[in-house]
Picture 1: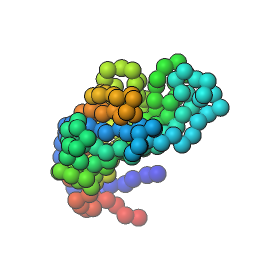
Picture 2 (picture 1 turned 60 degrees about the horizontal axis):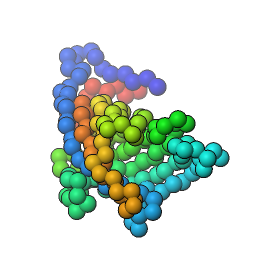
Picture 3 (picture 1 turned 135 degrees about the vertical axis):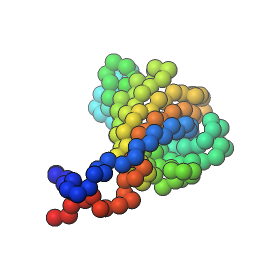
Picture 4 (picture 1 turned 90 degrees about the vertical axis):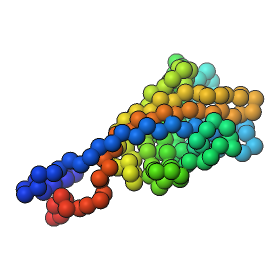
Length: 179
């Protein structure tokens, strides 16, 4: 796929980049919770014998809140897939889409894709793109476990996201050459 831009007669090709620092919490209601927002959708033939659930695939639709409490102000949802993808530890391949419903970025989405080394105190995940205000975004997220109540099948995950985005993308098509 090729993208052509009209560079003739125009000095401005790039626009203003901004960095957003977002801090929020994910309410993770796991399998076994009466209102579970995570569901196992597939397993491999070796999953039941694996100490790390290798091959287990989950789909999720978790609430994103401004604070760590379940009744904190909702700011969005995180939806995606996670796969236990390591034979020797709890290493999870994650495909997460954070859809914001409140605040400055309401209607925009951030996409994270990468490996989550679950047993580490802080885990870094790459921000690989987004929609709305976050078109052409790049950056990273730091995830940590704020709390984990195993008997209740409930965890709170804390995220701090640093996202570089172009604040002018999508406002004009004047630099696009159409063929």
